[in-house]
Image (cartoon, rainbow, N blue to C red; front, top):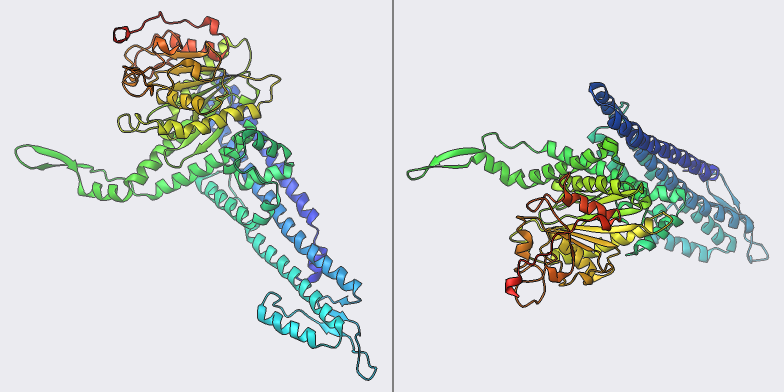
Length: 604
């Protein structure tokens, strides 16, 4: 880049262009939300038939376009601001060098050369003449610098040394500007969508690549922004985000949505927006990877004869495929199944008056993470946070989401018109095997701090006039995690509902960090998990069977159940479900309690 171009460069023009792209992205986001949460929701709630189904299909494609436009505009805006930042830094260096040159009586030529005046002490009364110097072209090269310093020292005109310094500073500024231009030009060229109306998996893969490119090129720009608190509390996170300007918020959202989406305490709308970017990019990446893996051979099984009876075994072809691709194929398939369940919940907004969903956490790594809210927790008067138990992972998240949909329905019916939000919190590594994993407490102990942070984050992001009423709901091993969270720190809940609990690490309800009388328990007929807990999972030093929440001596309110087994506590139309809804809605007086019964009285 030459001197005239850098002098004429106006960062403000690029910053204004960045603002324009950011505004366009905001409009696309608003349009997406209108399509999803108003137009599609109204169609699902009021219309049925082929025409309605076709309209929904087309509207969902339109929503994808708006979301892609929002994401890419955010990246363009951040790239333009990053370019302006880098060029402005180079221009400031140039202007400082030019000003210092003028102050020293030097003149800078169009090519960056510096003309210096006569000066110094001459011989025989003759003052050393002035001259013109140019940068060596390698101001950072140690050999060239050493030669230059020697020349400056030997030169009789002191203005010569100053001129060399100015020329090198000018060259440095021009090189910095040239490097910035070379760095950002391909990034901006890459931010160009296909000329069609279909947002494909490859488009989202490109968007993910674009994001990495902008983040890498813009590391100096991003480093200049206020940084998120290191290991900050939810209140710290909330204060950081609130203190950012619109441009700064947009930059973090565009370049690091994975970071923004994880921060407890940020507004639910912000976390949802960030996590949906991560969700769409991840899903596309996984789909493309799955498509690249050969499908399993159709001839999976064969029969061999060894002895008097034939045996069914895997074929050699299938075993070869399984050893090479099997684990990854299974992971991708299960992850995409869970992601489809989350998408199904997004697409159910409006059906039977179901509110919009908020994706408050997401990751497909390992067993996966997903935090999904029905209704906005930040404006809800009543909040419920549900922790699933053993075998829970991303692939099975659909059932857990549906449980909280059912709780939302019954709680809303009892909430006197006040808004309710029910949240599925799969924010920990749940035990994956009932026999090998669930007897151990470290899954609960490791996950409890994250649960406590999330609960605190609901306070930090809440915008209502008064504190919300918050209920923690646990199922199976999820109750153990809630117990660990209460034991380790402030649970930040008003009520606790335990269903099918094998034990909560404490022997008394009063140790669960909620007001007295606000621990509620359910044990259905033929649910064997509480019985298993009585013999080793509860974690007390009781002399005999260990105390669990279903035991009278624990001190919980024993809610009536009319379901059977371990998994039907959220079955529609049941007293088991209605009782949970009453607690969530703050109408404990309507809860039907179980008749007192201590099935273990004979062992006391």
